[in-house]
Length: 359
Image (cartoon, rainbow, N blue to C red):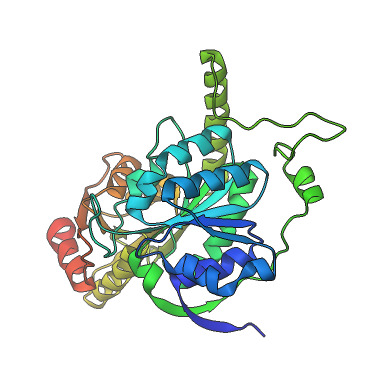
C-alpha cells in the first residue's frame, strides 16, 4: 500500500532527491526554499544512501560544486530562490557549455533586488530564456502541486541525463511552502562507479589503465570550435522540443475563451474558469508543464478554436510573450498579473477575463 504523507513542497523535493539516487546536494539557505536543505539535514542521507549534503558559503560556490560533481557523472543538484539563482547564472552558462546534466530547484520570490520573501513567478526570463550568456536553453518543469514537486524532481534527473543538460524545477513560493498530501517515489540506488562509466562515458573519473581521462570544459579557443559546440547544442534543444513537451488541458473541448498559467497561477486560473462556467461562459485552462520546451503548437491549435486568451502570472508579464508568439496574431492575448508577492484571487482573474478578453 502506498504511504500518503502530508508535507510542504520544499520538503517533498528533499525526499524525492534522496529517493532519486542523488549523489550530492550543494546549497545555501534563502527564503522561501530553505526547507529543502533543512529537510535533507534532518534526514541525514549520508548515513543511509551515502548522499552528500553540504551548505556552501554562497550560491556561487554551490553551483560550482554542482558543476564539479556533474562533471564526474554524478547526480548532483542545488536549490535556491530568485536572488540566489541570479548569482548562479555564470555557473549555469558554464554547465551548459560543458554539456553537463544536473538539477536546480528555483522557488521564486518577488523582486527585483533582494525584494520580498513573498511568492513570485518573475524568474521566467531568468530561467526559461537562460539568464547567463550564450545561446543555451534549460529544460524547465513547472509543478502546480506538492505531488508534482516530488515527481518533477525525479523527472528532472531523468531528463537531465537523457539529454546531458541542466533541468530546472521552477516553482513559486506558494507551491514551495504549501502543505498537501504526497505519495513519495520509490527508492533508486545511487550509481556505482562502474555504472557511471557505462551510463556516462563522457564523465571525468580520473586516469585509468585502458583510456585517457575525459576533459570537461566550456572553453573553446577557436571560433569554429565554438560554433560546432553551439550547433550541437541547438540540435539537442530541437530534440527536446520534439520529444518532451508537457501540458495539461482542462475544460478546453468546447472552450470559447482560454486562460493560460503555470504553477499557482494555473490553480487560480482553473478555479476562475470553473466560476466562469457556472455563469454560462465557456472558459478553459491550458497549463504549461514544461516552460521549455513550451507547448507552442498546442496553444496555436487552441487559438484556432477560442476567441481570446488571458495569461495569468505573478509578474509584470513574461510567459505572455511566448503565448503571443504561439498565437501569431490570430486572436487577442491579454495579460493579468500581480507583483511583489501579491497572489490574485479567482474572482480577480475572472473579472480581468471579462474586462480584457470577453468584454
